[in-house]
Amino acid sequence: MSVRVYLVEDDEKIVRMLKRHCAARGWDLAHGLGDGLLPALASFNPDILLVDWNLPTVSGLDLIAQVRAAGFRQLPILAVTGRTRDEDQVACLTQGADAFLAKPFSVALLEAHIQGFLRRREWADESFKDEHLEFSLSQRRLLVRGEERKLSPLEWTLLSTLFQSPGALRREVLVEALWGCSDCAKVSALEKLVSRLRLKVERNPKRPAYVRSERGLGYRFSVEARQ
Image 1: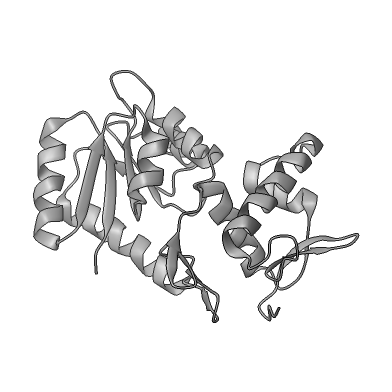
Image 2: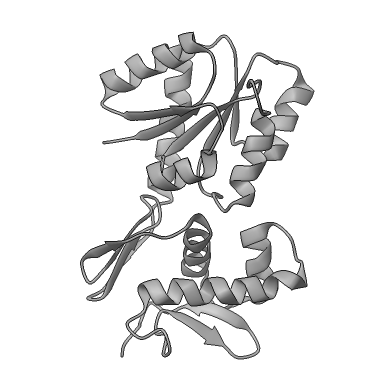
């Protein structure tokens, strides 16, 4: 199984170690120092993100918060740092990391964390397919009439949130899921996001069959789309 790992780290020893390990496992590794992280994630579409806390020009915790705020809510994030106090671990988890790895660490421990993330992804895998639309939430892969389409992180979060809900979701619930707040000013942003998603997945965006509006309720995903 191909795994894509994105590493934000300035310690060359750790970078070389992970490059060797990923190469041996047949995994793809991309590396950066935090500059341009969001577009890099959108392009590389990693399965796991590793972020060092102490970077030369930016705090790793700030990067984690930015990643979550940008809509990468399902991306597993492993915070890596030499800080080992309980309050440091709490800070990492509070900012949006899924787990905490203290330096120095062994490749075996890192591997255990990565495999744990991958198992949870497999267990949570949900997909949809009909003659027009096909997607996998865990792989973040979407096909329309057999052709791959790219979604933004927020569009993926919207699609997955609607798909995993058994019924319609109120607008304020979706705003909370997408932006982590209940700000009413975001409702117009939500409506624009819904419109962009419909343009990418619907046969006829003006008569949506998948991303449907429910009067007085909000939006829902229809698994019985027919036109």
